[in-house]
Length: 530
RNA sequence: GCGCCUGUAGCUCAAUCGGAUAGAGCAUCGGCCUUCUAAGCCGAGGGUUGCAGGUUCGAUUCCUGCCGGGCGCACCA
Image (cartoon, rainbow, N blue to C red):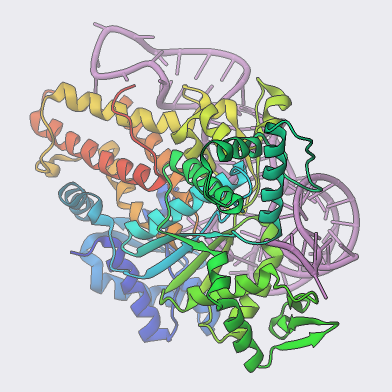
């Protein structure tokens, strides 16, 4: 059975297609915060009008007529407003249906028939040091984006590209080698530009203890890999694929990609180096593929890697990169276009920087705390995940450590968790669980308001899905929590009238389902008691 | 110099890839606990959206210029 979101969005898309020959992109409907604008509003008439030279109000009238015909019985009221908005008010019938649907089907109620196969590559930090707080944000955002896609029915794979070859790796191995000398009491020195962290010494130490028979290079790599996996595992993130750059090179994938580019005429030689003519594709500058000393650049193997991804038959590729890679976007797009990959297959999302803030342990602690693992240790797993998600990807994140750690009402995570605790507490007191019946006893505006908001959850998911922004789910949960606390203060769930009590328990049950589903997507455990 | 982000209430941020009266939380001030957890609820104050122009039915959003903050501009990875 289709949920209301599918019905109404498809209907609107069909109207745009059949009458105006336009394909509207989702999301078309927006849930409105203001009650007088209804439960959903759409600026579709304005958009259609501006593209077809029609009068917005006439377009709105046409759309309204069609909507009434197709889904009129689910809607209390359809209003056309001033410049050309359509405001839609849910009928009580659709609200009760939604409530029934959520309680009977659980989170499956929100699933859609997308079924896209997609690959999301994120973090991919060099295995030359522990993950930073910036990597942590990319890790959590990527994981949640994957969750959102999967929750809506896509099949998702998470991939980590391991840069396990090249100068930086060599430098790490050299640094470890020196530390081994130190441990053996010999003369040692940190190499130029080498790695200085404590972990370098730890690798050296553990190589002396258990690395016998292994090459130092291999040992360093597997040590770093497990260090990274461990950090990620602590906030509940794991990857389906670990792709090795080294293997890519060994399998001659890089040579192959260069050969194809050459065949297509996008490679030329100059000053002893091979260049990719990326300016043909709106890049600002041609890029070196093979240096004059004969070695390949990082970009060369990156082309090969992305070409490989393109050929693995996904419906969509998503990359999460840090802001330091923004200059890289055009050249990778250029390369894929040059290789004849499907247009628009790859979408790169830039996740902006993270800074730490703390009043108590001022700059000293915050300044030195750059490791993800330290941050997790300080504020906890769930709080770390939550705070990483409280800003849009494109915004800098000022991570307030004190706030994240606070167990009080001004901490939004606690505010949300408190809802879970209150619901469980009432269930316990009621001594029985809601059974989905008695929904017809829902009458008051306070009750309906909660159901209304629950009915808007699919629209929130859609927005996050299309715009690749987890933050909308965080905002939704905060609003749901606020609505629930108001409800809790104003409406007594367990009251004299047992039919009404049951109906209200149903509302709690549906709220719990949506809340748990939302938290599950964010990768945060709900609490039962506080 | 070029590119990408960014500038909104005292603070941290929203504002749905141009939409309706620019909204929350914190902080401040004032109310609400003999009834399901007061970690909560209700109310008040607080704004020339960095500045100046432009585009149109409509601009916090787009364009131009200026001012401020962050990041990046390799035959590094």
